[in-house]
Image 1 (cartoon, rainbow, N blue to C red):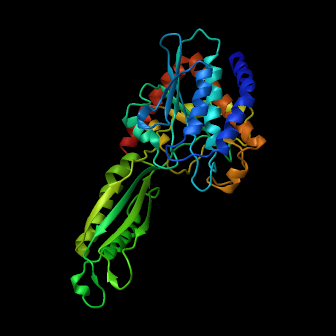
Image 2: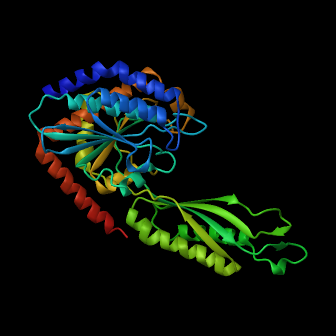
Image 3: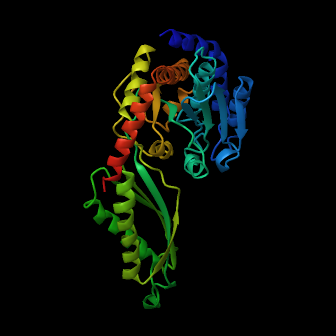
Length: 395
């Protein structure tokens, strides 16, 4: 516990600067890969504290990789942070706390007095709330060197996640033949009918997929006035499952059949625009338990069991390839919804600052446990591989 006492003191020494960074990011919300101020603030702090920083990694100008080597070899510990806001709301999801919280842990670990070698890598990952930069960053070679990946996130409870929903989204353009709806409807082929038929097909599909599947749709372009047979319409569809393989191998092919069938029935054609897919997390209970043990040691507030019901995140793509865990630290009342005014109002409070510090402490202490007990990392990796094999059989 002596090493953890050092961490407590090292993070406390940074507290004023970390909270100031969080408040500045809160006051300057940025979006969708344009987080220039936040990424600059965070990387300046990392450089000042002896990290080698590379900007523009993974294909994004506001993404970064900061590295520190303690000796040669040893485990590669990854800490990932986000700093994007929500358009028209600001930091209503608490991402302004993530970067400073992660940096507090990283700097404390860098200054750890230990003879055990390790490599420490901090990744800055923009645009989680929109297109999810981690997906493309993975495709461009990021995160592959990590033995384990950590994140922190503010929330209504101090807890971890067991899972998240894999997600694929599609924008479908239906092409028909425009005609006057009163004078010559027989000459038309309604792109609107095709869109409605596809919506109805989704409703029929709901009955014949696993209960944890989620399917949503909306109209992007209805095609024009009611006196015209629409020649073009657009719709967006979002498909989700807690199993990446079930989503890809069962739900998505049947979705394509629905689109094809709708067009066959209505004499229309279609084009599909695909978004980057989010994968489901492969949970590691050994790592989750270790994180929560440290949450208890540092007296984190509002500790609960892991979240069983979640949305989708690009960190799921990282955790599909690398053992990982996100610790959520409480700064709003239990039951408070994210992406809300309540999150926004609490963003610069003492509770938000305490949650930032708590996240730093828990992440750093968990890394120390892994360094001091090499068999833990081996156990984590073995559990991860076993769970991934099982997930790939859930079709």
